[in-house]
Amino acid sequence: MKEYRSRLLTASIILTQAFLIIVLRLWYMQILKGNEFEKFSNNNRISVTKYPAPRGRILDRRGRELALNRSSFDVYVVPNDITSIDDVSNILSPSLGIDSKIIDEKIKKPIEKTVLSRP
Image (cartoon, rainbow, N blue to C red):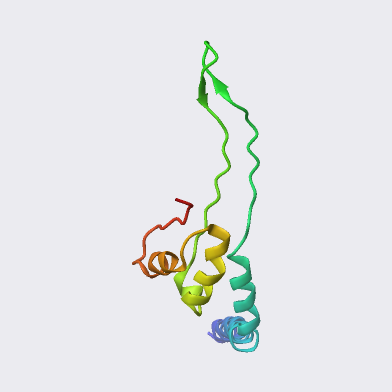
């Protein structure tokens, strides 16, 4: 019986230490380094990627164009990341050639996919 008690005591000590190590690591990551990891997370979710258009025009057997490459530029705004909608619309207005009031309205719309493009 003593043998089982010593094994049980050893196993419980090992499990307690493992649990304590996990709790201490979580505390370190959440409390001490939480702000640093939050900054990493915010910087990680925004990225600009350029994709080249590798193909040329697509023609049918008579030489008529079926598809061609055109540049398309879209602007997406995440309303939760904006501190001042007026500042954003004033910055975007000259670049896009759209009135700042129209940009304000599009940003303030309910959550839906809104694409700002030139008229």
